[in-house]
Structures are given as C-alpha cells and as structure tokens.
Length: 277
Length: 277
Image 1 (cartoon, chains in turn purple, yellow):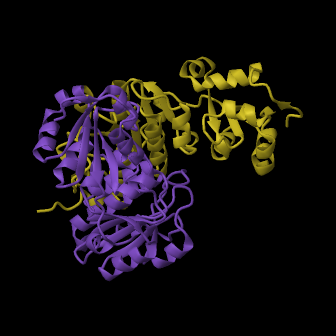
Image 2: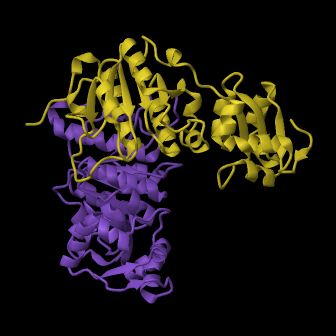
Image 3: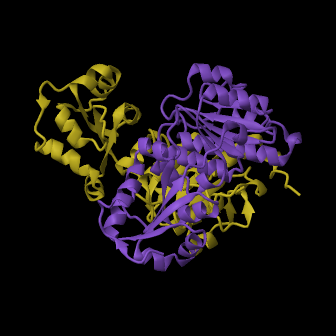
C-alpha cells in the first residue's frame, strides 16, 4: 500500500490514468479504467488484468478485502486525495476505488468455437450504456461470449464498463471484429445466426431456439443494415403484443437471450411455442 | 398556426411551460411536457390531452401532419425561435416539437379490473429512464396497465416520458398509488401478484404464468422491501445462468413481462417449463 497520498491532479501517474477516458489513449496503452468496488473486485479475480489501483484513504478502510487482494497480487496501489479521485473517476459519486486494467479481449477464434452454445453479437450498438447492459444480460443468460463488431461502441468505454456491472470480466469478449467475419466464424462453428430486427417475418415464439444460437443486435434507432440481415440465417423479431412501436435495444436483447437460454435448457424436444390461431 | 414567433425566453407562456420540468409545478398545473415528433403524435391521438404545442418553423415544415392534427383538434400552436425551444426542451438535440399535456393517469379502480390479465407495478423504481423503459416493455408485452406507486419516480418526469417512447400515451397508468392498496386491488381483481426479486426461491421458468398476473418491480439497487415481498403471492427471480450477480432492473422487467405474455398466449395447458435434472 502506498505510504503517502497523491494530491496533485497534475502528477504524471494521475494524468496517464485520466486520459484513459479517451479511446485513443486506451488503444495506445491497451488499458482501460474500472471504477467502484464491484468492478475492481471482479478485475482482481482475473490474473494479470489490474495494472494499478487508485484508492482513497476512506475506501481503503471500507474495502479492506480489495486492498488485501490487490497487495497480495502484487498490484501497485496508490492512495489519492478525494480531489484526485474526483478527477480520475467518470462518475458523479466516485466510490474511492479505480483500477487501471489491461485489455482483456480475445481473438474471435477463441471467443467462438465449436463448443459455443449462445453468443451475443453487438453490431452497430452505439450507446455505451446499452452495450454494457447487453453484456450484463448475456452473462446472466449464460452466454459463452460477446462479440463487439467494428461498428459498435468500445466495450472499454467507462459507461459500458459500469453498465456491465462486472460482466466485462466474466466472459470472453472480442473487440473491433468485422461483422461478416464474425458471422462466418459463428456459422463454421455450428451456430445458427439470428438477426434480432423488427423486419423479421417470424417472432421469437415461432422459432426453435434449442440449438446453438448467435444473436445479432443492431443500432438503437435503425436496427441492422440490409447486408447484415442477409448474412444471418434468419431475421427474428420480438413480438409486440401491445401498441409500442418497438422495444428498447437492451431490453429486446435480454428477451432474446433469455428465450434462448430457456429453450436450450428445456431441451430440444420442446420446439417452438404453439402458434395462436 | 401562430403567425408570429415567440423569441423571448422570459415570455410568461414560455416560462409557464418551462417550469413543468419540475414536479411541483407539474402537480400544481396537472400538466407535463412531451418532446419530439413521436410523443407529440401519440399525445395528439388522445382527445383532450394536448393543451398547447410549441414548434419551430423548421419542425412545422418537417412535420406537417402533426401541425395539421393539432390545428384540427383546436390545440393552440405557438411558433418559437430555436433559442426558446432549446430553453424549453430537456434534450440536448430538441426536435422542434414540444407539447404541454394534461395529466392522463386514471384511478386504480379503472386501471385494474376483473378483466386485467397482465399488470406491471413499479414500486420503488427511482430512475426515470428505467421507469420509462419498463412502461415501454409493459406496453410491448401487451400489459393492460402500469401502476406507479407512491415510492416510485413520477411517470411525468421528462426522462421517463422520453424513455417510454410514446407508451405513456398507450395504456392506463396510475400515479402515487400506495403499494399495499395496489396489491389488495390486484388480488381482489383475480390477479396473481408476483414480486420480481433475487430473493425468490423459484425462478421464472418454474412458475405457471398462464393466468392473470401482476408483476411488482423494485428498486434498482436493493430490490423490494420485506413488507412488500410478504404481500405478494410469490417472490420469483429471473434465473441467472452465468456469472452476473443480477440483471438491470429494466431488462429483468422485460424478461418477466414477456415470459407472462408468452405463457398467456401459449394457453394454460403448457404450464411451467420442464425442470432440469
């Protein structure tokens, strides 16, 4: 643990961490920021991910377990003043813990294999909060991995990391994958590729989801581009039973991923749900 | 249509509309703001809801249909400068259309009846974006109504109205309903009251959702208070198949509401999903 406290927001160490709020610096340093006890705890559970940890004196007392784990893992810990933490943290109420983490994404070939049963592909998802929420839902639904295409937001964006609520550290993710390449790999690996889009002819309730499945989720406003819809094995929509025009992207993704999880677990004999007359 | 343009942000009419961003003024005037073409169009589809409409010259050209509908309905239309619209609108990129709408919530007795099949109850939901997203999902899942309890955020909050994407205008909502009173009314009306909470012993996949059901959703951080869990017929959790600690509130609500919609439509013979060994 650091003996003295960093109080200067202009110290090189603080500046180096702070600029990771910007993608260009994250890509250059191959590092990103994770804030708060939950994310830091999850990051520390992975070997070699946390490069350094910034804490406030108060947070050290409150989260002794995290400090112990960091010290035990040989992670350099820097105590900073409240002012420096406010400068580093991207949240309004920083919780006194902020880790500089090394990139942890994996190659597509590692994220998608013949053993994959459920994969979420974020294509053209632009809002980092939505992307993080989909990552969290994919984790909850037991997905094997999440593919971020080159047209989607950076999963290391601070808002995405926070919205993922630790899930970024739970399952393999890819970054910057061309969508066509992802679809080819998914198909080669034996997964059925479903594009979630309101343009779908069949609904979630009418397709058999019991086999290995990949879901492609598109843009918040305009969905998926035609060329990606064509690449998919099928375009499937979430049924709208009421008068809403559509669902929010992250909620639609959760409904799709859970429908898959449920079908896969119920066994292949259940098949699609009975159709209404 | 207004002949001249309001350019003074201090004009009494502009000030009166602008203060509706605050709940105290909304409650006093029994009015709220709806921004953007989608919300304004939905509001105009309901008789007597829109009290006045503010537009920019540009938006009038782009959305002639809306202007026509407003004029036809006898709604006073005031053309304002871009500066005044920026002052009125709560979004960074106002779309040039803003309606002052009259409160449209209904009494509990009207929202929940013996004919209700699916009802969402927002208890202790504090984030307006989440509340609006749940309202949108409830609408999409074909819910009959949404109950906002007195411990939840105001559905007329601008962020909630926007996140609902028009759904606030689609189905009956109640506001400020005491939770115990809502549960009593739901039970009297023949609905099974399920509390969605990680404390549940059974998961969504293990309960029969084919009958009339009400779902209670709690706080983003801490869920539902014990007294409300006790009032419910059953506490049900969304199964977590992966390593996520929980789901985001709005995504969990969508998964629950769609599970109900699916079961109700599949018919009562389907019963709960087969259990895994």
